Length: 108
Image (cartoon, rainbow, N blue to C red; front, side, top):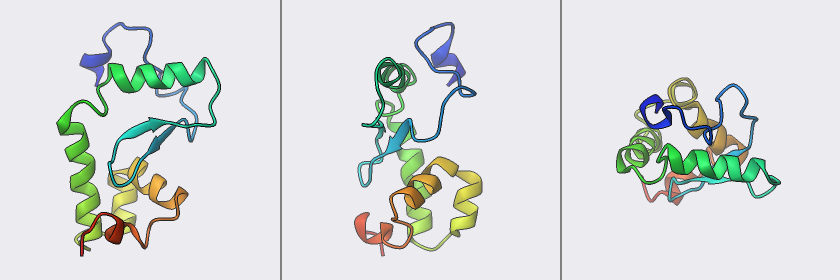
């Protein structure tokens, strides 16, 4: 991600990002801008998603999918998901999907 960020000023500093600025859409696993944000933060989040290719790079989406499928299949615990993929785990909790995500993802 640092290579993609380079010196561009339109990428948010990870230390300045507040909780719920980015949301994870299920089942697409695309990262989206929180609809409750106001400008200019909304534009900054959108620019960060675009600049870092968080949805355009198939590897990024596949990586999220791999972690989620492992959880859905019971190969990893939710606690392990929290440690290794905290954004995915947080979004599952925030959206109240911890128990139902396997059904949504069509994984049993």
